[in-house]
Image (tube, rainbow, N blue to C red):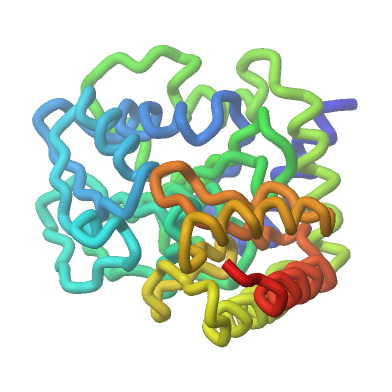
Length: 314
């Protein structure tokens, strides 16, 4: 029965993340984009303030949506340098309702490598690096993540929420948007995204069989280290994110000139490498090294980079 598949998927998440009994695991519709709205709807009253670290496009969307339900304070930002670093010089005040971060920034290739200290509930969008590295997931009162990076395919959304955080707003929440209703219904308040959840189940089984986060983290770090080393030692390419904030999931880099950029994209395609063109906001290239990407695939990309560089005369 599908109910058993949902129960197994939730149990696997709980086990892999080593969650305590206060945290509930939900599989929902709508992607992380819906969570930009659903989180403040459930947590933030109109006269209350949420604090947020602004580190890119996805936090910008969270800022906009939260402003529909309460007050938003941008506590820190890396916008002054096109989001190529993670802010560090800030202190979370005790007066806010919660503090929101985006743990990994796909477009800019930056990542929080240290969980920020917060006297108020910590909320994180972990869509692009969840289950990729060991962290204390219980330090977060609410985590949300679209499934399509490390948990499966598009269509399902993972939410991990501390039950004690809920029921503390005065507004009426439509049942379909109320986390408490989804908890009571075991993630089946309405017809669930069946195929997407089943694919998440298969992915979670694979990760457990692989050895869990403890086994996948060193592999992810090795993949990223090899690629960053190749870029750092290149005379044609350079990384865009500050070294101390580089993501192990998304490696962003640029070529010396526009001609080299187009030529490399064409060359890479001939070598069976696709999807590395950077986001239009930053240009260049982005190599996504999610859990399912093999070490051999990364080594192949590195060899293609070196081969192109040795023969490029632009």
